[in-house]
Length: 514
Image (cartoon, rainbow, N blue to C red; front, side, top):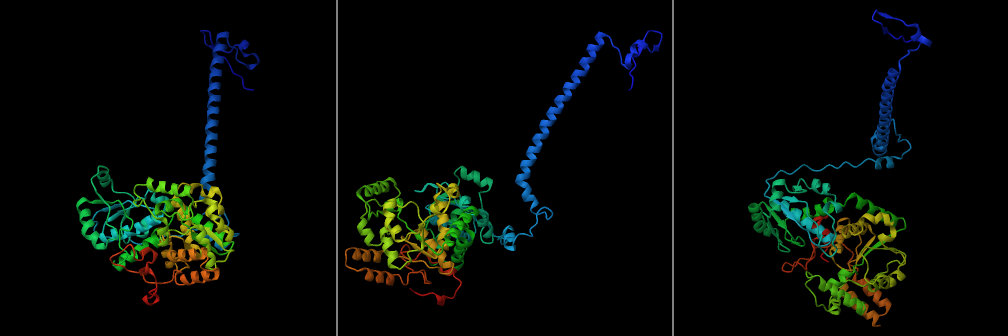
């Protein structure tokens, strides 16, 4: 043991005091002992506090690192061969984890004549067709297109933005060899727009491209920014340059992809259906808004007729208020009721065991109106019955996103049957034509309601009714045909998006005139 020696000064020099060396320890006076204890205790407290603080900091760091490791570790380690072995994975599974490399075309270099802003109106498919038109117009005028604004004030009041429904990066990148598209205006122009320094107008419906050359382009050159505040049916069906027609198709069938979340859920629905066999998609447009707008009340009771009428008057932009439902039905301008649809499907010889996927919102009248259809075809399903509530949680209250799911399932179905020729029916019909003329039964409602009434009142027996229904629709299966052109009545001619014939990869001889 080492001995500590106290050095004492007596004025004569330093010496060792034997009494101060008891047991080899220093012997201090009382005051010196108190002072020494204070000097020892304070450093010990500081040391323990420092240790405690350090321990807390270290544990905090460890916890944070563990959390980061759980989140990023697997992603970072996937590419390290010494951490994960793929020997047990099949080539198909291993390939599935490799994201497909998207190669966008080179950018088109051109003189920019201005910036075009557009506000779409209507439902999903009405806006979809409008977006295709606006891209073609922007390309022809050599202007920069700002990513379109979607309608949030329509009956459906869907707050979804463009990027909530469509893959915005694919939309911009896949078209960059044709038209320059930006997510928003450059800062300087954005400030001008916020100050109201731009020109806004609704373009004329069914206009030829010369209208945009003579009326819209000068406004762009003058004001730099032009806002088209309504875009539905603003470009003609026919009489347009071939490059414009093909660009409309390219946008529709290639650039306007849905988001990965929507496409993934759409594939899941199709997979569930395919596991149980073939399926038919029935676009049963017997929804409250459709009936109120069209004034079609066949099969409704007095209370429902009053409810639909009140709703029609509640929307001032629905211009037609007084409507003769019976007359409109006889003209074929009403969607078929669920009961009428049941008779038609049965008469067409649709297998009663087939799955029927209802691509629509809530059917007006609910179970009471759907009873006959479900009795005749027991395998009636919809996305809400095929999926868990958690699958649709993020799509609820977003009608356009729900419609996008129905759109994807409609494209993949073995048979597609719309009961009304609205925008979805038309756009899906055209897309299925583009995919190889997939079977689409286009119902002749005007002729059908006459046959149905004759069968109901006993003028036709079932066999006669069935034969006539089949005969009527023998050439209405989505087969190749030329668009009907009515130059002075563009609304009545065949819609471009239901039959985009310029985009089909076959010879003109394959098109029939029927």
